[in-house]
Image 1 (cartoon, rainbow, N blue to C red):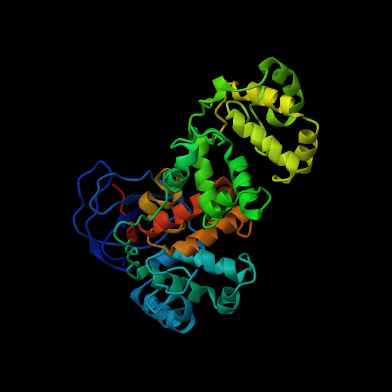
Image 2 (tube, rainbow, N blue to C red; image 1 turned 90 degrees about the vertical axis):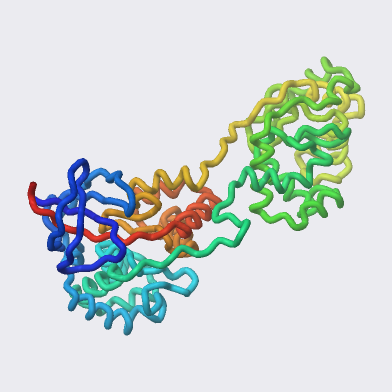
Length: 434
């Protein structure tokens, strides 16, 4: 039985066409007439333009959606008329959308388009304007319009402005934003300024909570409030991530701390429930105190006692401490060895894409007619779809599992990554037996 193969060609056509193909590990075939169609048990492979490496073959069955692969030029012409009447208003006359959140259809895999249209007809995508558009279309009409859009040249990727990047490395972005903090907190988050806390090695969730406490007025500091006034939530996340990944160390002032460390160790037993044994917190809601600047610890406890920091639990704890006890606690905690929290550097868009490419093809150019190409798709549409899978608006166990671990930044990066890849059309051909 012949094999169904996806050959990446300058432009997809359906019907008879003469092409040159190369099987994996074999010599090239001569020009032959291509028979487009779906055959049960056919094996799928692909060849990238200008490349010799082939994808693993994948078995496909003879579903109704694969009838799109046997569309004739007449079918495509009829599909074009239907698309102009029904689809062009949103998806563009040439299948290239200019409407925010509306996907490009040009060059998309035809079987995938057919399956998506059937999903809208069945209401599987929820109540959307698409439901009414496709509700009364026949199966034949869906096949033809899918084949038409698949026959079009895919859209070019958007241009990236000079000096700009399609994706953001949150750690590097956090480092750049944290440069404004280095004067007080040190380049790597270990402060040499008395009365200023170390930020290196703090759990990012706590660092974000602390920054938001300054912007909301829960912590009283005009300097910090003004410094953070223009920092977005995403910016705070990146700054906190950068500091969380830095190696913590004890404050340079720890050795000269006033107070009795032994007495402080006894008193610190009452703090362990929130701040951890020896001041190393295991709860992201509470900061680690180990290795902190001793004068900062004294001033922070004083702020809770006097109301400069609003927290009823800490206010009660601080109220019970006299000045000597506060200095003893600061002397103990400042001389303890801080430890790195369990913070992992996030994967880059390229690293996430390696997982996505297993199904969606190298650089998002799917070689399975039932799976969508992602290359050069609108970034805002890809973002919406990933979020819909993550929240369960779209149902797919595989895609939900893949998207569930993605952060908002991961989703944005992935969408922009694929949007800026070059889309390559694929023609699916049945080859004769060897």
